[in-house]
Image (cartoon, protein in one colour):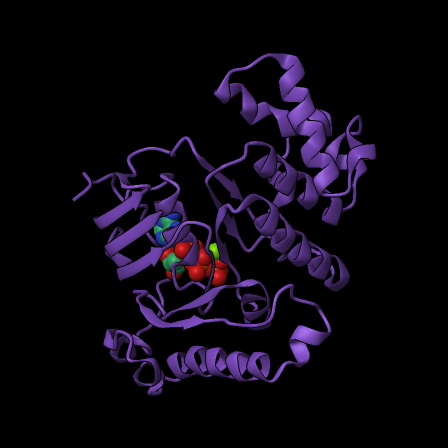
Length: 287
Ligand SMILES: Nc1ncnc2c1ncn2[C@@H]1O[C@H](COP(=O)(O)OP(=O)(O)OP(=O)(O)O)[C@@H](O)[C@H]1O
Ligand SMILES: [Mg+2]
C-alpha cells in the first residue's frame, strides 16, 4: 500500500530526513514515534503529497506521490485550524466529499454516518467553536472517515486533548480500523500510545531522521485500555521503544538492538537548527 524508499528532505541547508525506508501493508496501522523535531511531520507531509521531498521515493498503491493522492485523508494535531468556523459540523465533514462528486443528499448521509461513528450525531448542526477540543478533534476524524480513504495519515491527532478523551479517541481509531480495514499511519510522541494502537511501531532517530527501530506489536485483540496496558508484552514493548528513543537522544547503542539502520547515532548529538532561521526548502524536482 505504501512504499517509502531512501526518502530525504532538506529545508535549505538543514537535512530533516536522512534516508527513510518504510513499507506499510494494506490494512496495517503503523505508529511512528521519534524525538521532538526529528522530522515526523516532514515524513507525513511527504507521504501526503503536501511537500515535495528532495530525494527518494514515495509510492501509494504503487503510484508515485506527486500531488495529494485521491484516496487519502489527513488528520492534523491542531483541530482548531483544521475546521472552518463559519461552517456547521455537518458541512465541515461533507466538504471534502465534493471532490468525489455525488449529490448533496448522499454527501449529507455520509457525513451523518461518520458523525455517528465518532459519537457526535447531535452536533451536526452546531459550529466547531461551540464544541470542546476533544469534540472538534472527533469532527476532524469524522471528516476523514466520511471520505472513506484507503490511507489515513494522522499527525499527533490526540496531542491536545485531555487524557480521558485521548483514550476514547485511541479506541475510536482501533474500532474504525477494525470496521473499515483502512491503512493508517499515525504519528505520536507518546510511546504507550504507539504500542497500544499500533500493529507496528516505527522509531525515527533525531534529524536527519532514519528508521532505527521497527517493532511488531502482537497484543491480544480487541485491545483494552486497562488489560492491554497491564499485559507483559505491552510492558516489554514500551520499554523497548523507550530504550530506542532514549538511546538515540543520548547517542546510545539503540539501533544495534533491532539491527536497523545505524547511521543516526553518529548524528545524534549534532546541534539542531533553530527553526526560526531555517530556510524553507526550494521546490526541487522529485528524484
Ligand atoms: N517549513 C520549514 N522550513 C524550515 N525548517 C523546517 C520546516 N518545517 C520543519 N522544519 C525543521 O525540520 C525539522 C523537522 O521538522 P518536523 O516538523 O518534521 O519535526 P517533527 O518530528 O514533526 O517535530 P514535532 O515532534 O515537534 O512535531 C525541525 O528541525 C524543523 O525545525
Ligand atoms: Mg510534527
